[in-house]
Amino acid sequence: LRIGDPRLRQVAAPVEAFDTPELHELIADMFETMAAANGAGLAAPQIGVARRVMIFGIESNPRYPDAEPVPTTVLVNAGYEVLDEAEVSGWEGCLSVPGMRGYVPRYRRIRYRGFDQYGEPVAREADGFHAMVFQHEYDHLDGVLYPDRIVEKEKFGFEAELIDAGIL
Ligand code: NI
Image (cartoon, rainbow, N blue to C red; front, side, top):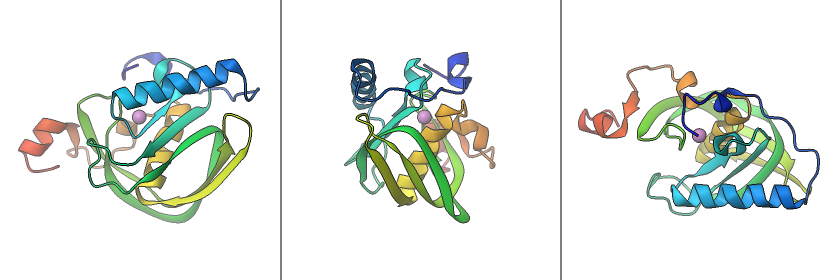
């Protein structure tokens, strides 16, 4: 789904049952969608499913050539706490906001937790790109898109224009 579709603005509901055919199918669809678009992450609302499921991970990604690797992760019913109130800004893109980039402040260091598709707990501390990707995907579960969080409005636009202008 692309920005403007009201389904991206819903608050997604928690998953109630793990290790079900429905959940495995949803996650497989999400990985397929993310791979097809070279995404670094995806949240279920982006494919029209209002459930608190996110995936992320990158090894090497042409959309994010300078990003450090992030482990391939499935997170269901995730939550997080902020470990460092300091924020760091970085350029973000979103498969629901195609062709555009924005400079977004995020917490530098967080601890997130949730469950994988089998109901096994997952908990990690994350910083840098890893923390940014998590916070971006988590926002999707609450109907928040990265343009909502941009502070420096001139650092938002089509990628080609930002590059031409020397901003990105
Ligand atoms: Ni996104």
